[in-house]
Every structure is written in structure tokens, then in C-alpha cells.
Length: 155
Image (cartoon, rainbow, N blue to C red; front, side, top):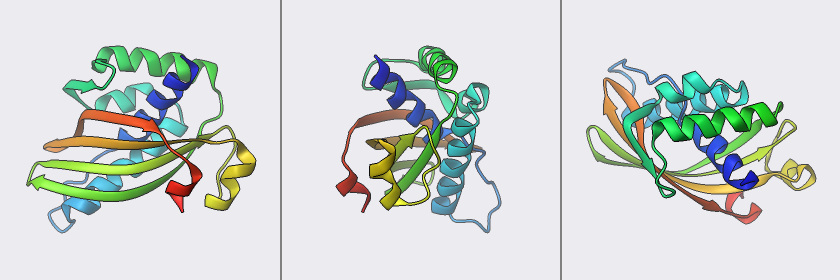
């Protein structure tokens, strides 16, 4: 259950953000900003902000809905006082103007992660995510899939 909670935390970190609505910004840049905001929210353990980044019909591979995942995140944040994330976006695929798939890797540790080379000394957990985003005024996480990954995926 501990690693599942870590995965959920990573998921929220990746999702939490405020989407930009400025028409001069590309959808890919909006999504990158969304992910950056999500990382900041997760590192600050802000469950409410992460929940706002999820679609009302959120689901994932474990059949969790938005309310269930938010509860799991609260528990994870209670048990882990220090959360530091390192992300690598592998691909942003726009399916339509309002639908996107993001493939990324996320490393999570209890200490700051300065770069990829620091990961091995931190005992960081690494996961591969595939996030399905939908835009309704702002980008929201609709579905998530994740699995363990290795350091090789971040280089």
C-alpha cells in the first residue's frame, strides 16, 4: 500500500496546476504549465489544489474516482512530510483541441532532486505515467495510468 500511495502522490503532483488561458500560449505550453503547477502543489502537499485539477469523472487503473484518490493523497501527505519530484515529459499528444495524452516519468524522493544524476543516491522511486487530459476552460486530469520505471527511463 505504501508504494501505491507514493504513486498516487506522484499522480497528483503531476496533475495539479492552473492551466493558462492566454491565447498566445500553445496547448503544449499550457500542459507543461499545468504539470509544473501540479508538481508545486504536490511538493507543498496541497490536496485541495490537486483535487481542483481533476475532472469530476476522473478514473484510473485502480478504479479510483476523484474522491477516493483525494483521500489517499491526504493520507500519503500526512505520512510523508517531505516530497520532492523530478519530472521528464516524454510526449504531449494532442488528440483534439480539448483532449491530450501526456507520457512522462516522475521520480519522487524525500530530499531535493537537483538532476537525474542525483537520483541514485536518494533512493528515489520512479514511475511512468500516461495521463489523459481534457480541457474545459482549463486542463483537467480525466484518467491516469502508471507503472514502476527505472533510472534508465529518465536519461
